[in-house]
Amino acid sequence: MKKFRIVSRWVKRRVKTRRARRTHSRASSVRNASGRRSYLTHKELARALITERVIHFNKHYNLPLGKIAIRNQVSRWGSCSKKGNLNFNYKLLFLTAELRDYVIVHEICHVKEFNHGSSFWNLVSEVVPDYHSLNKALRKINARVVVSMDSNLQTNLQSKITQEKL
Image 1: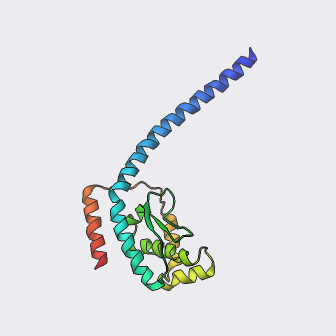
Image 2: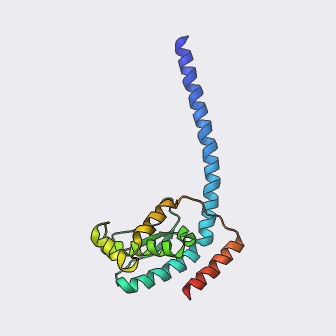
Image 3: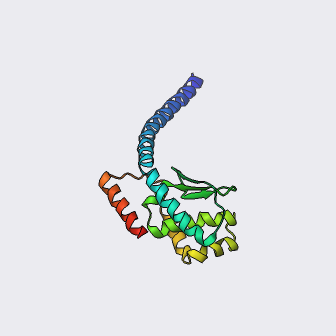
């Protein structure tokens, strides 16, 4: 009889855990759907802005760049491959221009220096001399935050980007 009670408690715990996971995964899928919708809505706007800034900063570095991809990354603002392909999080669109430019310069510099050594940071400082403070500020901002914007805010964002180009 004692053995049966132990199994029974184990079964109850498993059932409770599975129910909790199922509830969590339903909420998670709703969040993911809204995140996907936001990504699809803002992807091309982010691509246009980021590509324009990459071209602008690469005039200084003159490095051979591969493809530029805009992704819905969970915890990264950007990344660089050994082939020189640059990946950027579409949420860069919602950062300040200074932080956005810092991330872009950071990833461009990885094409030449694929590490975070002193020569890498010297490259970054050529264009972004205050990279220390920007790096600290960026760490405080969580890339996992789901961005949801209404159409008015999106229109304001597009006009802000247009003004930045001037």
